[in-house]
Image 1 (cartoon, each protein chain N blue to C red):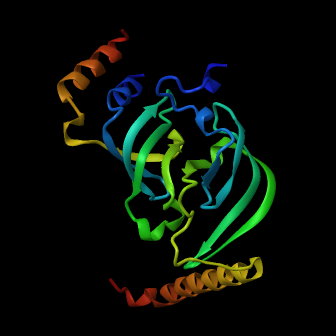
Image 2 (tube, rainbow over the protein chains, first blue to last red):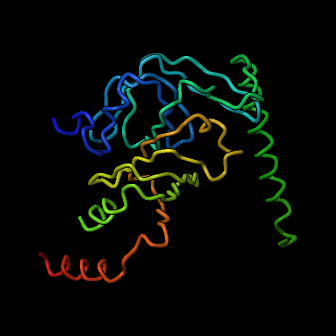
Length: 127
Length: 93
């Protein structure tokens, strides 16, 4: 299978990324981190020890998911994580799952509130 | 196949890829395939503050289907050649 051939010349094959720790960005904005174990021409991916990395402001949390098969159409980007560097900027704080869920909810509520306020003010015909 | 061939000529040049989720990434074009999937090296996210999770990503694979624009280097397009190639392709050879 040529698409899985190792990268002798420049190809877009993900073969060089096999067994590496990767960051996968999905179409819904979720970010998964895990070890790439398999892939195909549609960018269907198998991630081992996958975690979902949730970031809210300066807080972050890695929720363990396990072994994941990602359907290719949902994949936006596959990034190699530089193992010599920290994944995230130093000022970011690791918090518990409960805490990140709370922060996520607070952020969602704030956005919704902004939305309803804007709707209510629409009659003023701002801009 | 025209744009595939065209992108192959751009390998090694610096391009900015803007995705449908508004993420814009500048990097050296490493490779491209028939789906216009793109691999970039030495990337820099245009709005770094907004995407802290991209900080430690140096090389990445972008699925062709999520690309909105590719911004090319100024000397990236030889309009004459592209023009000719388009006509040739339209004629079917």
